[in-house]
Length: 134
Image 1 (cartoon, rainbow, N blue to C red):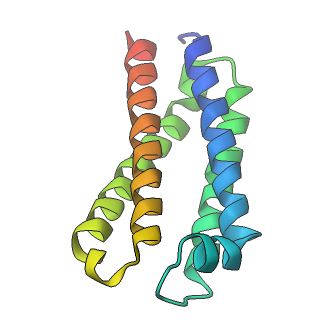
Image 2 (image 1 turned 45 degrees about the vertical axis):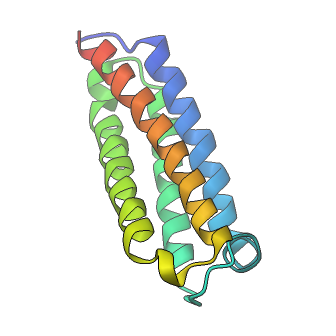
């Protein structure tokens, strides 16, 4: 079994913080974040909360993974986090490509900012993963 590197552990802390922050926005401040801050044109009471719950689960999994000692114990969680980021990036890019005419400038700006954050998380995650499997 290989040891869990500190840089990978720190990346899980970053995933936890990011996941908890956005879970809070989507679960607790749903109407403020979606309607006021994002100026989102569609009113769906379910989807933002389901997205927030998914983020909460991933944040808790990342936090629990950070307490593990061996890489093999957290590898699947780490890979799942990376896959989630990739799929969400694809959806964000599709949103910008196909929904931009229907979205406000604020909604587009928020999506771009979220996409940049996800790209940074992906780069960090891939770097840590590659360092871990060396």
